[in-house]
Length: 377
Image (cartoon, rainbow, N blue to C red):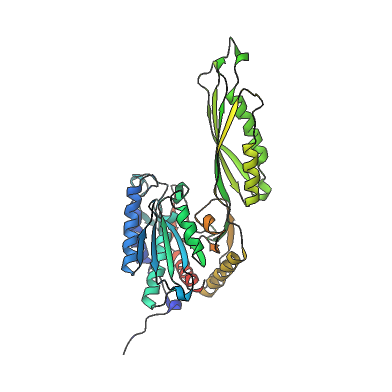
C-alpha cells in the first residue's frame, strides 16, 4: 500500500522545528552595515532553498533569488519578498539573548523579520512534501539592505515584480492586532544645508548672515507643509550648525523625515521643499534627497489578495484584519507594479526595540495562512 502525501489543507506547521530554524538565523547577527555578516544568513537560507531543489542566483549588490517550480506555461510566478539584514549591531545578543519566555520568543531580528523567512520556508517545505506547487511557481527574493532603504536591491525587486502575478511580503504583521498590512506610507528624507556669513557676534553682528536663523525659519516652513489629516507628515529629526557661541553661524543643516500616503502629495512636498528660500539673501540653501519608497496605495488587485487572505483565515478558524501603516517596506516598490499584500510574517511585537519577540501561540496559524494564500493567490 502506498501512502499519499498530505494535501495543502492538511498542512500543520511544526512549531519546534520553526523555533530551531529561527534560532539558527538569530544567532547569526546580521546588521545592514556588515555585508559579510548578512551574507552568512543568506548562505543558510540559500542552503534551505537548494535542499528544496530551488534554482538560486546571486545578483549584483548582494541580493539573492530562489526559484521553485517555475512553469511559464502555467503563468507568472508568485513573488515573495524577504530580507536578511537587521537594525541590530553585532554584539546585541550579549544583552538581548535568544530566549523563550512562555509564549514569547525573544531576540534581535526575530520579529523583523527572520521569523518571516522561517515561515516562508516551512510553507515551501509543505509544498514539496505534497508535490503541489503554486501555479507558475514561486520566486523568492532575499534582500541584504531593506533596513537602510534597499538601495542595492530596489532595481531587482521592481524587475521581479514586473515578472510576477502578485507579491507577498513576509514582514511581520501589525503588532498587538496582528493584522495584515494592506497599505504603507511612502517614505523619504531631505537634507537642507544652509551657508551664511560668519562674523563676530559682539563687535560686528550686522556683517554676519545667520545660517541657523535661516534654518529655524525653514523648520517652521517645513512644519506648515504637513497635512496629517491626509497622511502627510514632515519631521525635522536632526539639526546642527554654528562654530562657537560668539560667532554668527555660517553653517547649519536640517535632516527631515517625510511620510506620504499618495504620490500626488509626494510631488507637492518635493516641489515646495525645493522652492524654500531664506529670507536673508546672503544665506544660500541647498536641498538634497527626496522620496525613497513610493506609497503602497490600494489597488483592486491588492484588495482581492486581502479578501482572499481574510477568507482563508476564517476557513482556518481565526479572524484577521488589515491596516495601513506608516513605515515602509520592499512592498512599497512592488505595490505600484503588481498586487501586493504585506505583513504575512510572524506575529509579535517590538520591531527595532529591546522587547522584540515572536508570539508562539499565534505563529503557526499565520504560517498556515501564508501557505494557503500562496497556493490560492
